[in-house]
Length: 473
Image: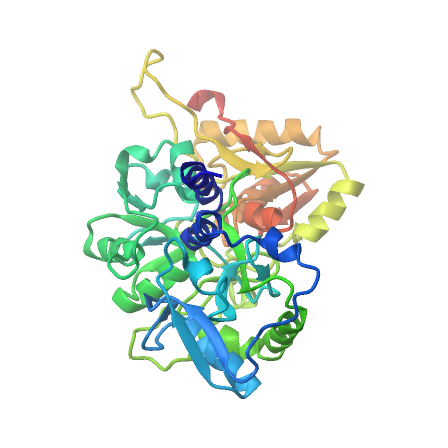
């Protein structure tokens, strides 16, 4: 493979994964000659790990991951591994640029890379020890849902790194016109684009930053903890979350087993380190494990901020009228409240109409039929109908009539079950389900986890456009 061909291959990987570090390691492999199949071809390759020292390969200036002062979260995790092995740490420092793997792990100058994407085939991976995702960072005076289909994003100036998954979603939603571009692959000693994006949100230079979670979370903590940060809502065909593991050479099974044992034993300690650095982490269901953004003078391992208990959110007498993106009650009186697993089972046993009520921008008033207008798209549960905006607190009279008629059609006169959803912590789905019961429908299901939980459960999504009441078309 020529250097030019290799770089084109690397560019494609960057576009698919969006993780610059993964591309750098692939560059080192392709251009430097360190490839997994070459290692796997050896018939005898005993472990070469130095048992007297934990030899770590790391970047000397790449916070929040690592630096030569030991200030990164990967430095702290390395300390946990060394403590468990009861050995000192010795670093091999090398910038995470082309040749990183070849000049470190490949030349056996060190034995462990602390953080790699679990999908990385260049190295042998340990078991993953956390999962993170792309996030949206914005100021507290802005109310955003995390979805790139949110009408509130229209006209906002958005910072993003090109050739990342979130950049692709921006293009899909027609938001490129207000985009500010920040470089993706850089010399970390000289440039820190993630830091600049967060600083620009804080200063008002841009309204929103879209970035990889561990980077964005750390710089929010360091620069402006008042900024808000939410996961970007996933869409069909675009992967936004990644499992992270440790990287070692192939054919070192004993070393892998040792590390996996330590990762299991010290899981809580490692999670505490990630929490202290404000790394957004996802649980097994893909839900955000919320942590508080910590200013730099806080202790290294603060306790995570607890999410308000669902039981403490009371059901209002009427509909929620504002701030629709907020913690919701645990139940909806009169409806069945379900999670993704239960909804999957219900679909197998009942005739269910799936109804998404996530908001969507309307065609601007006064725009004639001869003027271009593209209806927004949204990735939703496969087979669902997107009845956009029907979960607001108060509907116009014509919308109310149209919504009631559409529910009657979907329910086939009350024979089918109506299942309402939106996104996590979305009052619009709660409102819509309550409204359906007020119309007299008694087979109503509320799925508060919405599209995000459905996607994280591994179920299918499909793109659709919103249904509109005839008076609004």
